[in-house]
Length: 508
Ligand code: 3SK
Image (tube, rainbow, N blue to C red; front, side, top):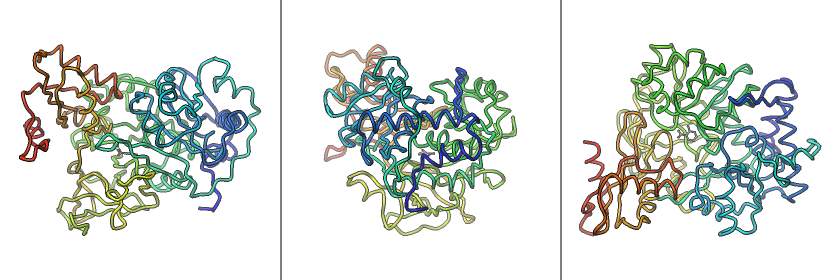
């Protein structure tokens, strides 16, 4: 990569100039279309608002909070153009989850979809008074959309260094304390030069849909990095059930779909796979896709889903299988540009058939912002993910399990201790323990074992009350779908909670 590199140029300015400014870059199922020219102008206007009105200087951080829509993409590119650092957060996060992220990253500005301003304002009022909250998508005088309309749309991108930080992407640790992964401008192009170009291979006429939020690097890669760099069009869906998603894929003539196995399973369960027949490609990530689901899609509509495993620490996918190089049951082989190994407890490489922790090396890697946990993730030169895999003699990698307390449900990573802490704030709860319960549709669901205070009724109404309580204090997708009341929790002699004993109960 050249020393000076602003990734936004490769994602919007270059496609607009080389493939044509009139090509559609972004669409919504509601009928909105932004061309590459319009996206470039709006991203430039955002950069102008940030630098001219708000005084942003290169290196300062800007927090984004919104669902997937065109202004979010313009905001993302505008921050990069201005030399700022994007801090991505999901619209689903509550003030309790947003606060620690804002405190750690100290953004000077938050660009927030106007429908999700309350929690951002609460964070400003409680933990970060220096953060200016600017809404967008509304018509208030200070709204980003209104400010942007007053700008020329001409902006010279800040000449950032290839190794300047462009993105701080939070990832929920198993303890619930977010880690912030730092990614450079060159990392953004790296994921396209590896998975994008070698595995996904988008064409300019592709229409790409992805259900993952832009705040999750899976969604960011699919909808912004790979799509725009290929000059293709992203279909931005704010929210859709699997049935609605299948409907949209058919009606909007989507050619590439990326989602978690849960959605594919639900579409098959409801007999809606015919709606996916127009797809040229489909990507499954976030969790392992069961072999049966993969085979049913192949047998019913001839779709060979590209399975992949990635990590926010590695920005995107590093092991995948596509085309004819697919071995049933395996996730795949390292994407060109990456090496992977199975590591034993002492860090040595294990041989075929031996399960161990997955280690990865590639052009991107884990850099946590000021975090001791860096030592756990990067060891002996390997990025050691939280997954247990094994590989066969031909170099195909097979997923076995998570190695930590993380619960992966419908592709979302949920830290068990964080949910326990939220449950424990319910006035009738004495203590709780949370584990993953295997689930055919979602991979796993959060299952909570709850000890109530004396006198509290252990009934369905109380379970629902606890679920609603968690939805109020955490992002709703983290709530325990299964609540079980118990008199005591299993502990060892030194009083340590034995989650494995609860796992044995739910896995029976
Ligand atoms: O596999 C995942 O969970 C993942 C994480 C971050 C980025 C991309 C992917 C697929």
